[in-house]
Amino acid sequence: MDLASLPGFRDFFPEEAARRDYIFRVWRETARRYAFSAYDGPPLELTDLYRRKSGDEIVGQLYCFEDKGGRDIALRPEMTPTLARMVASKGQSLPKPIKWFSIPQVFRYERQQRGRLREHFQFNCDILGEEGVAADAELVALVVDCLRAFGLGEADFRVRVSDRQLLSALITAVGVEGDALLKVVFASVDKLSREPPEKVKAKLVEGGLQEAQADRVLSLFQRKKLSDITAEFDSSKAVCDRVMALQRFFGILDAKGLQGYVEFDLSIVRGLAYYTGIVFEAFDCKGELRAICGGGRYDQLVKTIGGVDMPALGFGMGDVVLAELLTERKLWPEKLAQPLDVFLVLVDEKLRPQMLSLAHQLRGEGLGVDYAFGEMAVGKQFKVASQKEARAAVILGPEEWKRGMIKFKNLATRDEKELSVSDIGIEFKMLLPGWRTYASTLKQ
Ligand code: HAM
Image (cartoon, rainbow, N blue to C red):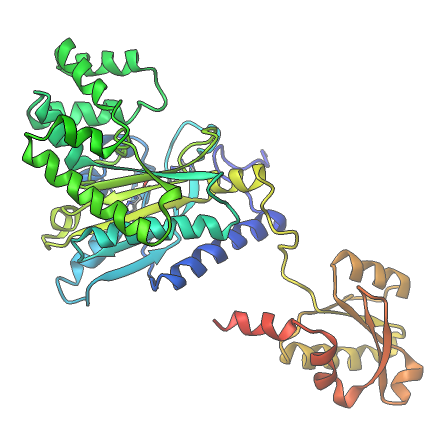
């Protein structure tokens, strides 16, 4: 029997699970700060849901099969179609703007490589029912603040922003027309950051563009500033309108003080087919890793899937690239495992029933408590307590117990103190500062 997990799938041993939970905590906390509500959906959907709008690339990566009822179903490769389906099923009845987040595990049969697995967890934040660029800017600000909460700064990452409508208008302005050619340009340009321009040009020509057209299209990506574009294409109203929208978008991010984290980059088009407007991706500044996150506006998807007119935008941030970046920048917190408050040390097995009762009482107070299941030498029990990084040990010895006392030992300072068993709850709250905060965070 092969004991390894499937290629591209991960086992989460406690250390990895603790890292993953830390990422989830920061994601959830960011969503809370931006007033997003949690939602969830099923991991399996009808394959048709993805065929309709996600695009050929992702459909080619589906884990799909026929279920026992003869349905053609797939493991979700992304969350957005499920979200669109769920929102569409409520018609226009949900109060807007809808601001929802989720952390699904998603599955894509991709070639395994650095930053790419066959499953990953993806933080999704989406806003539905809002047309203005204020929502696009809010989402990008959320991405920036989320990455900052992990300790990443301006020297570590950038959010690169583009606009599919602007790109379409520019492509039309340089003489390439028709939906089919536009699709070819989007698909080829998406690879610009990973492939040499000659290869991208060859793809454009293969897709039906004339050589001169392909050169003109590629030259568009030399424009690094919005003002360069307006100067050159001032006769195109479509171009100027979109440049103005993007200027409003960047103005909002400036007002939030986030201008250092975002930049305009026309070559960001996104691989998924459903995007219709502003699109963005976050990258590490060294350019060593794949995208940390990606998203944008998809104003037609809810209509295509469920016939409901609803502007929408969102992004997905995977845990794989993010974890690589945190490792590289040494940004993991030192202590990630759940803290153990107390290890109970039993000096005499005869006191086991009393120890069990004490453990139950302390757990009832919200403390993390552990002890040895069977008889064990006292020295060994202390060893286990320190392996588990317990903050304190409580020693139940026959002498003290007779006097209604136990011994409390702070394992960080090595200080010892006798405590009365009857006041133990109150005493503990003073002796283990911080545990109360920990217990109350669980309730949030
Ligand atoms: P996506 O660009 O396909 O977008 O994925 C978003 C992020 O998920 C990527 O930037 C990357 O961090 C991570 N990711 C994607 N594929 C893999 C993989 N094979 N292994 C590890 N990580 C991966 C979407 O999925 C859109 N549905 C996002 C969205 C939400 N758009 C609007 N709302």
